[in-house]
Amino acid sequence: MSTIRILHTADLHMDSPFESLSEGKAAIRRAELRALPKKIAALAIREKVDLVLLSGDLLDGESYYQETAEELARYLRKIPAPVFIAPGNHDYYSSNSAYARMDLPNNVFLFQKNEIEHFDFPEKGFRVYGAAFTGKDSPALLKGFHAERTAGMINLMCIHGVTDAPDSSYNPITVEEIAESGLDYLALGHIHKASGLQRAGGTRYAQPGCPEGRGFDELGRKTVNLLDYTDGTWSMRSVRIAARLYEQITVDVTDTDPLFAVQMVLPDDTVRDIYRIILKGETDVPIDLKQLSEQLAESFFELQLRDETRLKEDVWEKAGNDTLRGLFLSKMKKKYDAAATTEEKNTIEQAVRWGIAAIDNREEVFRHENQ
Image (cartoon, rainbow, N blue to C red; front, side, top):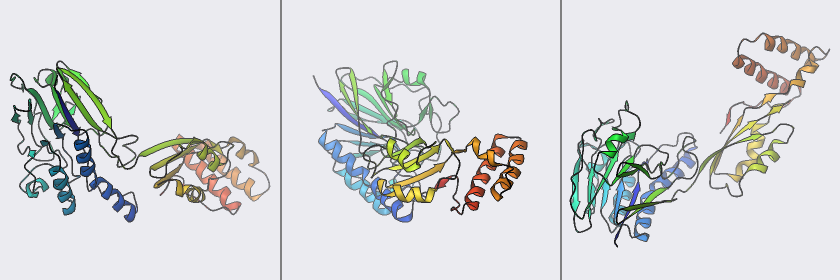
């Protein structure tokens, strides 16, 4: 009983700009993404994989650092197995692309055409199909495709594309096309959320997701896929190689000190990670986001705070009192009651909070994000 072991990943997006971070932290994050090929190579060696499938968007765009290309080629060379690259919409192949200028080693097979072709490895028991994006979009490449069946070989495909999106311009693929493809495994890229191992007809397929999150639209644990094929049976493991996590949590601070409320819900170890904390609930004074950020800063690599709390109803009780606060609240209450939309009411509530802060000689703070 022989097993074919495959490492499948995609969407590294190396040299992403990380524009929301400071210059220094953005440089750290770019270096961490640049380290992904080294981690992939180490995992491939440790797990003794038979091949590596890289399904596009290894680079974030046409602008890249030379050392990134050099690191990619350097560590792919260390993998003692064939490596297949199917360029995607961000790192599409052209005569001027990074791939055309790289000194790729002999164990790397690069798809360069926007049409399906294949490489055969009869001694290893597999054939690998694939294609490249040669521009920022691609037509539907699996339409009408059916892999040739050869005794003793399994059919694999490495390609960038998206399922269940028939109007997409990024190589749209239907489940029916997968089922009729004659493939044993379809290694996809493009979607940054892992799909798990899926099945259509006799074909398994997966989106591995991105191996390293880059923003709050890529939350949680990010992984690469390790697949084993043994006598017609497939199994898959997800392995984390990411340096950091992006996480978002919501904290209710009603009748509670905001710092205490946040600390009560935080996991034990967040110091390497990037968090967005959204504050909810009712308050009668603005939350001092600057102070809270300073109190929490050492617990994270990067922290964003959002104040989405609402004004307590009893704040309006002093409207009409013969004081500066009462006169201010009375005037704002009339505006609040006359507001036609929820958005207008929220704006007036925030104005009241700022006004109270000014009257009480508190520091004015911003409602949305503290970065």
